[in-house]
Image (cartoon, rainbow over all chains, first blue to last red; front, side, top):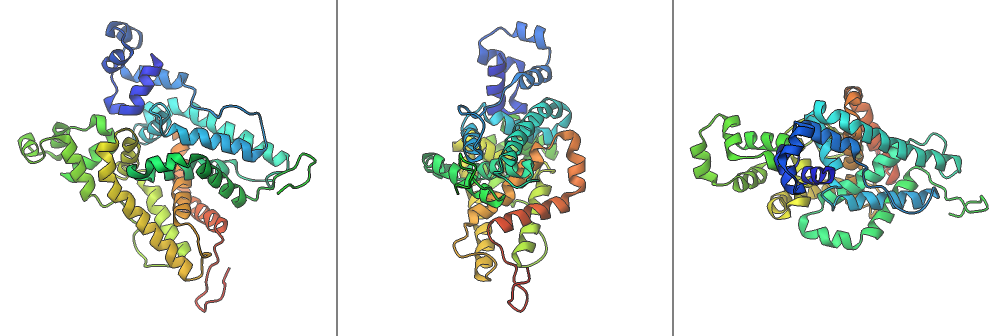
Length: 193
Length: 193
């Protein structure tokens, strides 16, 4: 049910969201939906609360460059997937309907901030980044450059961009890393870059 | 009419957009709207085609830092305005409905790219940026960092962010400038930074 709700929301946004449309998409009766949630507000808030956004897959912590490339690839891919667009859609709509989306989103936003902060702080501990590096700046940069680039690429050039996804993601991560003073650490603790 | 259409679209998105709703908001008769546009697709395409997105105001060309601060301030402010959100909304929806929004948006996207390219190329000519600096990278960075930061700020902290808008915009621009090797040029052509 939540998946049908989130897919519909990702595609149509809040104005196109209704219990009837979710019931049609999930192929369930409307009566059950109405008796369980009663309103479309309660359903979307529950669906967002239960949602686990796309996460980078595979690999453990560090080195920083590898972690960021995995994260950036997951972010890049999410823009090409209606459910992946849920996060961006909800952020945009939270600017207009803060009472409805603000709270449901706040958990996701704090979780993202915590995830990003952990990645950056581990890198500082390993000596890959200077003390005092701003986690928000690193994450806003990687995520923002990607989203701005994907979204502002004209539809007619989108396929070409997809074709060089890995190269583009690596370039972006390397640009941000050099901007924040990244120093790769070799296994023996010496600089390897 | 176009303003009513764009405001409605910025708030409600494509799924909430209809000729009836535009007529109500613009306080005009539906009959006129139907006879002129016939469908909501044609109205939104015309409204986007006629739209001039928020532009930085005041000041002429250069120096680069000043131009980028004006541009970044206009972008920052646009996220707090339903009509300003039209561009982001249409970009998101063009990922889902490329046939409808792709073409209307492509003009705006190309215009933005041209504007950004002109700013960066002038700065290269003045010696403020190294030869070969990528205009897309500079613009994706400034615009993306801001949008990611504003949109991922929890609703409860948004007022605080607005309160330090100028400081935040300057920090962001200075971060991007240092990342791309900016050198301010004094009036006498010597480095002033």
